[in-house]
Image (cartoon, rainbow, N blue to C red; front, side, top):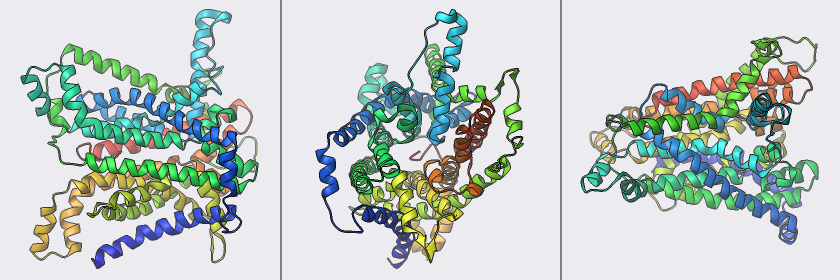
Length: 549
């Protein structure tokens, strides 16, 4: 009992000091230094604009979730039930949109569907000056497309992981009783998949509900969500009290969603006859199956087309295709004082990501062990530990600046503040990777070792660690990749000498000229390559496709 209490101190202290305390600090400042004042809430509830922002956030997240499921479920079926050359690489690529900075994905959509994008350029080449032009900038259409593009990988990874390990005996038994494929899917497979589908849908809803960059960059101010409203109230209007009240409402919503999500995911961990995906892939495939596989792969390439368009523009010049933009990254022809070598920027990202990975692994592993302890409050604790993933980056960033702005803990301008912020975003992914493995671990293994005289430490090293080792590698890789692509908190907190790859991309895009745009696209391509390599590693080490992500 004493060991379990000591285990709980670390992650709870980390969450309390670096998440709850900054959040309380910025909210207390918003409410007049801690005085209980409900005036801001009265303003929100009495203003049709803010009520409209809340309602818009709710329904756009619901519709975005519906579209994401339509995109993600066929791809989940592809990866769960079929083996084909290049599957590992393709599955790694599906996760790229979820990790890429908002500004990079926005540029991908511009490169594909903008006025000078590949689609409109192709239409002009085919039909001449009178060619129809696709104009979806600053519309709801591009918001929904971007949300589905960002989040479909959540559905793919969660549902395919569960689907891949369902025993084919269920379907075989149904077929022997005379049921067709549609009946078998409807009455056998779908009910078994529903916990995983609901779990992924709620998680997608949360990310769409808290969407910031997509709406701000692609949608415009007329489609402001609660997150965008918090940003505008804080940065532009300096109405901290209203921003704080709106942040509280958002946190209440997200915590309720997270609580439901963790309850559903815990139920989906109920033991079901599972087999390794290779046993499933040994089934004979018909010609119709192969046509379905080819069709889904083609559709997946269409989904990934914004990132493919971004790479094409990165190597495209007026003279054709060449690595000119990549070479230009390593020179300072303009003599700018603000120039930062790409090697320095890349090294900043790598070292911050490594430090964040270590912290995220320690906090996430300890938190996962706390959550799996038997008790009625496990879902509440699970949702609490997941909160940093969905709380407004603007609110949390300003909380850091307010809470840690004086000695002896003055982190402003320090690289440590970036590492802490990245760790807060990364450790929930470690938790979600470890939990299914810990919940599925047979309890008699630890009990037998304890009966034979092994101490808790020896039980962990010799029994538990070999079982969770692969999940730890997956969690570490995920934490590293998340840190590499983190944009919101970094943009708010970083100093020029500590610029990371996403911040460097944003600054290049903010400078005029085709050369700067080309360099931003080249830097984005480098970031995609690093993240893709990380997720190829994940697919190599994932144990039986098990894991929350």
